[in-house]
Length: 59
Image (cartoon, helix red, strand yellow):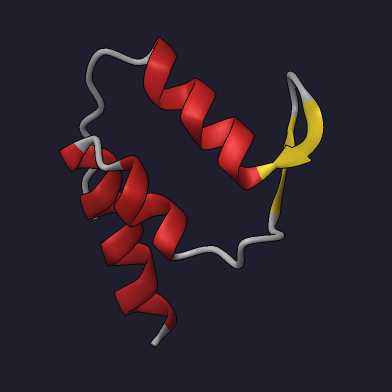
């Protein structure tokens, strides 16, 4: 199960799909970012996608 979730996460990042990434998180989830501290996942990923032109990750 965890492997499939990780694959879905990487696929969503590669697609640039904010909606798909956020669907993998609880609506109240937070991200502990080394740069920004603990922030809501919705804020972190919205900002990440706004600041990133392209992402390619492999599993």
